[in-house]
Image (cartoon, rainbow, N blue to C red; front, side, top):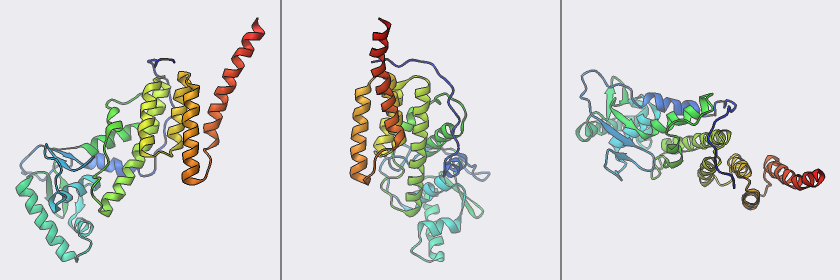
Length: 281
């Protein structure tokens, strides 16, 4: 088995993925400044893997914290839109009343976490948000032309699901959007590891992508390429065979030709080596 080798080589730039603009908005707007004169407080707001504010875990999805989560994901938002999204089952007047009550409770329990500026509600300035960090990492991978692995790339492998216990429509939409973009970023990260001849890192990245989407052909193709680069032909053939069975059982289709082409080329190259040695004798 070959060991990973350090180094880097250029990889082709990646074109923007569908839905990237929303994630960029999260990264840009999560720290918008509060109105002048508002007391400054420092918070760590966690939405990945569950809602947490600072060290407090398993917080209930009450109205106040839902407001904070909404403006984190969607940026500065009008009161009417927030009220309509958080309380769609009641009339606009009552929904706005619920919003006012939630903001009042927020000022008492978490002053400075959100701020109301005119008709908009925004996230406080001194709030560190895990979604913002992951979004920035995704942006760097999908938009940058650099061939190098960005700092802190491991965070992409360990990030949890967005508010997994929440079933609000506005959360479900963003959860799926973020997961799709994270998968695309994991593919790109694996490509960069392969280009740098760091096959073990590439395999670890592919494992995470396949745990999120077991039928993702791009991730499997990258895993096969990493195994072949290590000289592990049998392992590459094994994961291809297991993937082909799963794909047939779930969807009744075969893997794409690219997957088999990579394996076939490796087998042909291996079989040609003894013949070349014999001719040289």
